[in-house]
Image 1 (tube, rainbow, N blue to C red):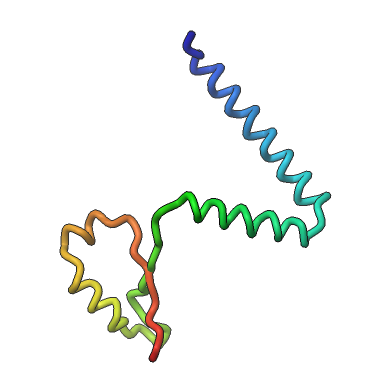
Image 2 (cartoon, rainbow, N blue to C red):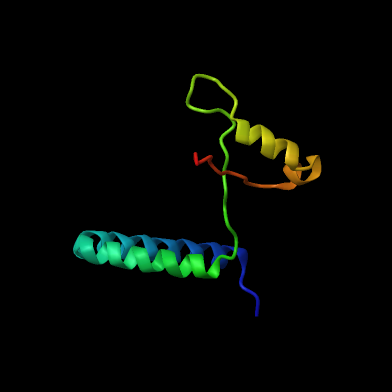
Amino acid sequence: MMMMKGELWSNLGSTMAAIMFVYAMFRQYFPPQLQDYIFQYSKKLSNFMYPYIHITFDEFTGEKIKKSEAFSVIQNYLSDKSSANAKRLKADVVKD
């Protein structure tokens, strides 16, 4: 039997409240070292399951409003279609 929309939203609200309560208790009562350990391994687990790499290049450098050479090269390399369809592209230049 399908759930009614009202039931679905009330269940979602109850679930979110429970998650927020558990998270608050976790932050308050677990030692910071254990929190760091758990966050570190949960991040590794999520990275293992997420197959994509996120790279970003800034358009302007920190030197006033000078346009980044790397950004210009990447912009020229990528076709108009791939640039328009991309949701996120970001990276940074490292000297040497």
